[in-house]
Image 1 (spheres, helix red, strand yellow):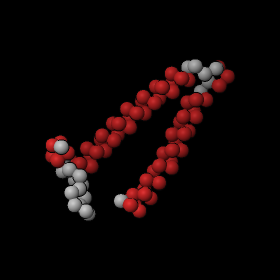
Image 2: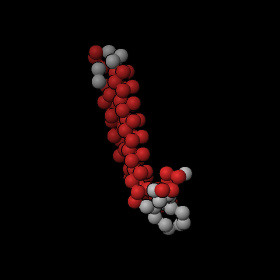
Image 3: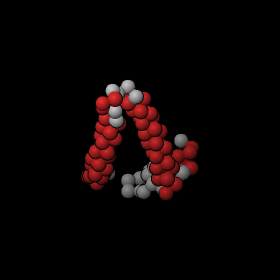
Image 4: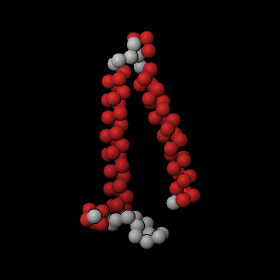
Length: 87
């Protein structure tokens, strides 16, 4: 409500761009949420990795990082294409 409106709010009319403060605030919220999720996910993986047998130590963490890397590699261009087509 009020906080979003004081930052310029989302675009009200078709073709009206959002304000810079609104975009900055949105990016701050996204980055903070992403950071918290990343830290929580890393801590869960680190705790589970302690239970791995000595012969495969580190396999779980490397698999998780590889999946995250490839997911981001796919998500970035895919979201760009979707936004270009439908945004």
